[in-house]
Image (cartoon, rainbow, N blue to C red; front, side, top):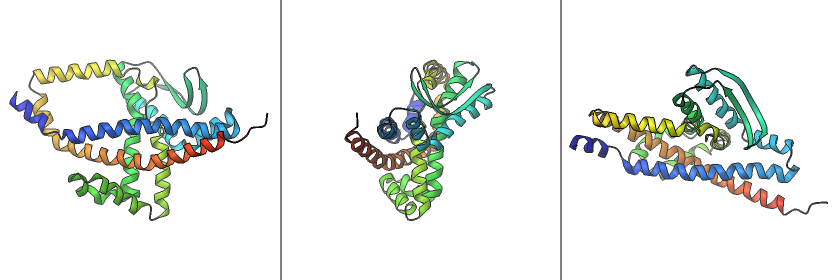
Length: 258
């Protein structure tokens, strides 16, 4: 028991909690971003296919990455993909900006396919920030917990040139599209229960503790970078959200000819 406790304590749970909190804020930001990004063209040209295409084009890089993530993951897991579509489509559950169709498979592979856009989106934002914002030099700041200072330094470095503003757009587009949709999440509950069962068996067998202790430092490093990545994304997305919301408000206040 003592070994298991020490292995758990080797994880920086402050980092884990911080990433969880930022993830929740990012999800809420994503929800409002998509609402306003759709509402603005709808207010300008009406609720029609033109507005839906304008909405799609606004976040097109993220839409493409989202659907490619599903497709590539399915193929890697030996699941046949028989349809791939980019473009708005009105369905019973709402509006799809793209979709793939693949053959039915087990819940474990289905859950991984559904989770793929979140993983690839997070990785893409990290890569963009690393190269466009000079994030390579902020490792020491993250190690000491100065992630706000790291974000500020990264933004000031990146926005000093034109490529930084292009990176801001790509981070916005990817973050607006990276969260799995409701159909993507259908297999998550049985997959989570299965993983909990594996964890319980590993703990009972005395395997989990040594494994966690061995992986503690890589896990802590990963969560430091997740804290930075999600924090930077929120700092970028919030001003864009406010601009979109202001645009929606201005459009909806315009008098309409009847």
